[in-house]
Image (cartoon, rainbow, N blue to C red; front, side):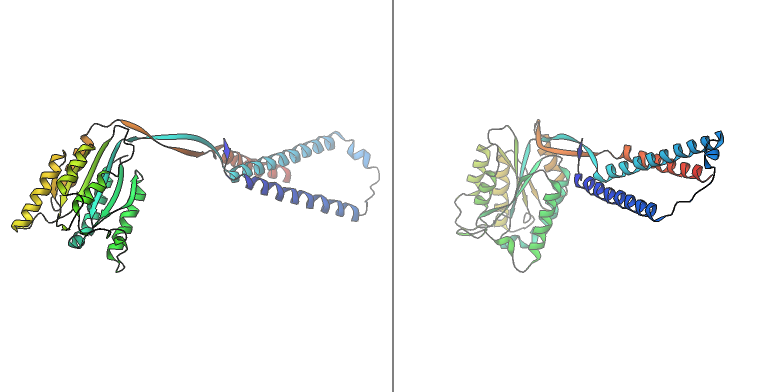
Length: 327
């Protein structure tokens, strides 16, 4: 059992001490200033059995009232201090890691906002997996590292969507270091090496979203990056927004893209394919993955019940005793 607001107890004690001191001082002043009232033969009255019984009953009720008031005050202080039991919780997590690899080159501008909606829906489908987002153009930047915090993931998607709509183009920071733009091979290679815990047996997947329109001289070609991913045990799932184009050279690029991702054990989809998200989720979750221990979390379970019931019982007692004292 721990106390969350221990300082509240000290504050209450200080207030109670001040109130008690004031009451004592005022009673002494009143007693000193009030003249004595002599009553002849008062000892005959106080010796009567009825008087003695009434006085005893009055004192018992008065002491009981004071005792109940103390109980209510103590329970109120305890409720304010918020006593809680503390347990150590370590949630199980699926040892699957997924890097969302997003092409932010000029040819992808019209698709990126829709792609983030796809990623947001995709993140909602997973339970306990770790996700990361890497954006690339001429070079790759980790927008956020591997994490299983869904609220944080969704907040980062919202932030990136806002940056897409901003004229400042903040999301471009760090992605223009290279010879050209939309260097897909370099982007995939960068995403494939973003996985940590290389010594652990984990499921590792990259979801690569690009139209494969390369402009420049990459360090890795797309097939070479695919070979790197396969060597590192990473499956690549490709989503191509430009797949529907009828131009021959774009068809060739789509065919190359599809061939590379299939060689890693992944799958290939057009962005408008309604089966893309459920298919990717099913394929990733179908990979064998044991549960692993997540980060340690301290869980505070407040215990207000005893204090609340004590206050309620004390208030009922105060009302009852006050009514008896009035009689």
